[in-house]
Length: 247
Image 1 (spheres, rainbow, N blue to C red):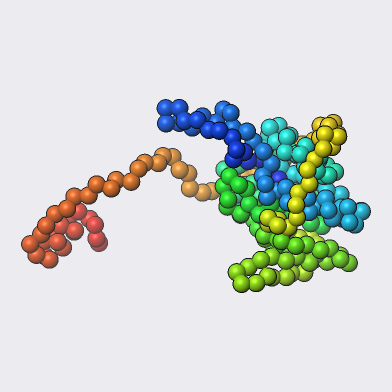
Image 2: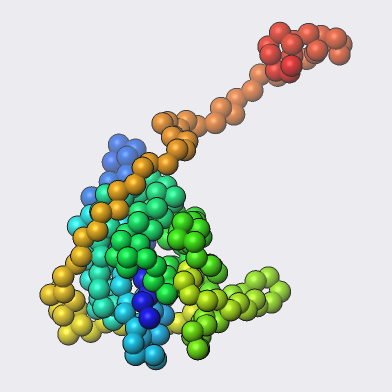
């Protein structure tokens, strides 16, 4: 069984941020493994420990600065680490496309299971898992709180308002891990030192930039308003037409 785990690097919420001349100084901002991705790695490693014949590979879109999170995944029990280079971080679709290209190239097809974190703690969009599933042509269930693998079938549970949904998935499938799926293990020094010696594979994840809206500038809302008193409704209609406030 092949399991791909998609992980991301996010700002550490415990890092201090200073503002200099109204501009945030992120020079001392520390980057860490996305917390939701820890649940994804842990679940993949648990499946390997339970079923034995399982290969866990971690994928991350970025540059060499992402070595730390990939080695974190290795220290938690992943077998391989792949850095997806050339990908764009501007939008979820580009990230999903880069991951999809890298996963197809690495496996020369599709793995049995792709596990993602529910969302990244920096943007909180929760879009990549479902986009990736669509691009891979795989079934998907998000925010999974329980998972079992029996006789080639993945049984997953997710909490909804007022109840719990249960699904049966046949590989290939994509799931996203919710908090509560497991308790991520703590890594020891021996595992960390071993992970530092493991090679990191580089895969080209360059894709065409997706079309979207580009934000160029932001400005504060003008809350000052001019109040005028008019004598008749005809005056109001005339002014609205003159100032093009109605058609």
